[in-house]
Amino acid sequence: MKFNAPYVSASDFDGLYFQVSFDTENPDTDFDLSAPNRPYLLIQRQFEDEDGGVCYIETHEPETYAGHFKLHLVELTARRLRFEIDRPANRTVEVTFTLDARRFSKVERALRIIFGEKR
Picture 1 (tube, rainbow, N blue to C red):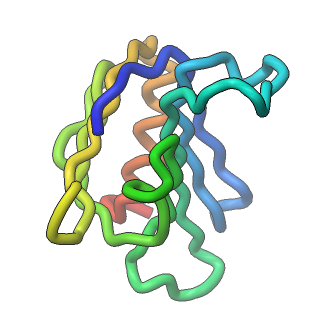
Picture 2 (cartoon, rainbow, N blue to C red; picture 1 turned 180 degrees about the vertical axis):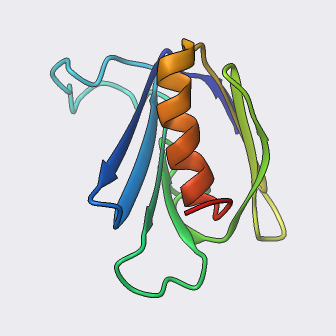
C-alpha cells in the first residue's frame, strides 16, 4: 500500500499509548459516511500491559491492512515512512508527506517508540 498524506499527527497519552495518524483529508472536517473511503493510516501501540511487541494498524483497506502485527521500520524521513508487516503477503506500507522540522520531531519520536526503537 502506498499513498500521500497531507495531514499527519502524533499523540502521546501519558507515555502509555502512542498514536500516529496519516490522512488524505483534514481530520477536523465533518466525516461523510456516504463518501467513499479515502486513504489513511493509523498506527498505535500501548505500553500499559506487555504487548509482545505488536502494534495496531488501521487503514482504508481493512481487509488487508488492519489488525495487530509486529512492524519493522524500514525508512523514516521528513518526507516518507516505510515499514513492513511481519507476515507472508501484503507486507510493505509506504506513506509520503511533508513536515517541518518541529512537527517531524514529534512524529519521529512517537514512531520510534511505536516501532520499539526507543522508549
